Every structure is written in C-alpha cells, then in structure tokens.
Length: 178
Image (cartoon, rainbow, N blue to C red; front, side, top):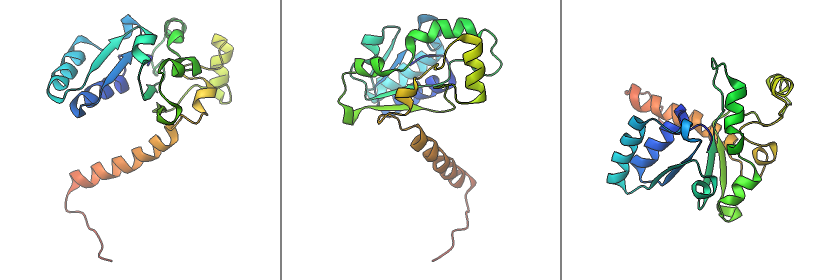
C-alpha cells in the first residue's frame, strides 16, 4: 500500500505471483507498477493461480487482505517530497485502513521493510515534522506499535535469509561435525 512502483512493491508483486499468493497493490494510479512488471507478474500468476489486483481504491484493494505491507514514500535522492506526501497521504497505513480489510484480528499482519517514518522521535522524523507539518508518514505510530506489527521479526528473518542464500550460493561450506 502506497508507492506501487518501488522495489519492494515490484519484488512482492512478482514473487507472490510466482508462489501462487494473491497480491493487491493499492496505490494512486500514477504510482502503479510499470506495465512491464505487471506483465511479468501476470505471466507467473497465470501459471501459479495467484490473483493480482492493482487499484487506487482502498476499499476494494484492502478487502480480505491478511497482510498490509508498506514502504517509505520518498527514497533517498528524490526531491519533491511535498508533492509525494500529498499524493500518498490517503494511502497511509492507519487503523482505519486495517479495518477496511475485514480480516479477523488474529489473522491480520502489518509489515514494513524499515526504516519507517511513524513518529517524530528521531532526528529525521523531527526534520520531516518541521518541514511538512506531519508526525507520521507511511504508517501511523498506532499501527507500527500495534499487535498487528511484525516488522522487527521480519527484519530478524531477513538476516537469516541472507545467510541461507550465501550458504546456498557459496557451496563447499565447512560444517563442523558435532
């Protein structure tokens, strides 16, 4: 939810399509994944049975979702933060957005690949607050610290996944016998 053109949205769209996992990209029309990425994902989805929905409609896009995933709205090097924030504010992950899923509490998860702008406690957060008058950007602090949030488990698992990929690709690893 948010910027559907960024690397996380593209990676999740294609990977979910490969694995047969239904995926909804909820973003303003101007920030939908490129046609090329959409065609790649649709090709994989046709084989795997995954359903893909790319929409700017929050109600339609969030309905029935078990996982709501977002990423930072403005990447390093981008200059027009004010326009991007204005464009994406309706796509902020907040409790109202989570409620639109209609998913039972024990089956709903919020994920973020980090870092997240969810409050003004950091130096960068304070700078954004001073410059743009907001304390929360892509996710509210209420969601970020809620029972639905698993972003720190996600970050920990990333480390183990990277180790596994390194082990699988380096080959001939020394594994001590116990």
